[in-house]
Length: 365
Image 1 (cartoon, rainbow, N blue to C red):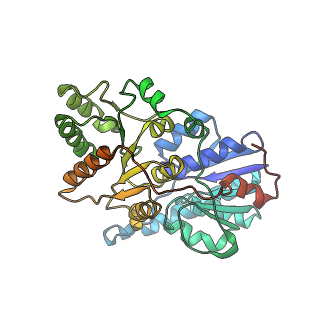
Image 2: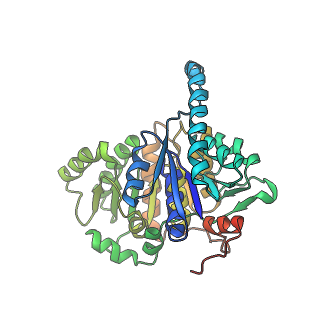
Image 3: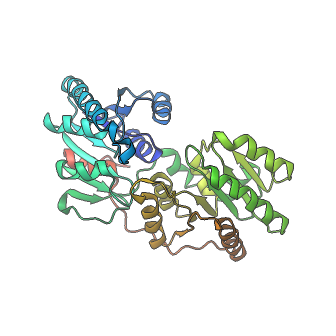
């Protein structure tokens, strides 16, 4: 059997596809179709040795000042479709899976026209433009956070998680903290800026952590800054003597599963991947939605987790540093970090939904 995945630029599009590929690679030949000049997908797929087809596409220009790019968008989509048609005609996939990026348009259309089964996955709480357009055309629409209704073709699935994260969930948080070199028994606050970091959050959290330490509040922190802010953050913390048992500062979280499991509370943006992982690990969170996110999807993601009893939303505004500090002091003071979220009855996984679509027997775990 052959499966083609169409993935985008962000972790929310790439990692769920990689999680499926981990489960299926020994039973199927897998091809990834990605956008050219995609550093994250290129690095991850190269590491796992998956074959890759690159398409030179751009996002749909939505602002009036960029409207001149509309003909370029159409022309590149047309060229990408013909490239997909030629490649998939020879490769003959049984199914195409779209993860919600502009690469999905030509891939899913070519696969549909040649008779392959089609499935799209929407990782956010609100449908993006691409998946809104494709939803009426495909065989299955899979969601985790979305509350819409597309009838029998729509299925709600558990968040696709990589093997590394599933294994990390079985570890003891205290032992992970000790291995990281931070205090084993203090509450631990994890700050995640996203795969590219988040400058505003990084700057605010440095000052918040410093002030809480001055007040004598006992907690540890794990601050993931991204590459751009890492050296500055390390220098800031070292100058104030905040690193060591009280905290660590990382450029990138290479073992995010262990970091989530070690955390008592997470402070982050509300991208799809972060929210899916918070649901999986059932961790208390302060979410700061990116104000400029397309279709306000980060706000909708955060609202979904807030309704689920996991998250508190803190909007980015001139005084939000004080709100974070006061909220954090309250959470650490309670020391329980209880959440009202209770996992629902087990949902089918995205991989199982694909198996059902193809009439494949489900693999026993």
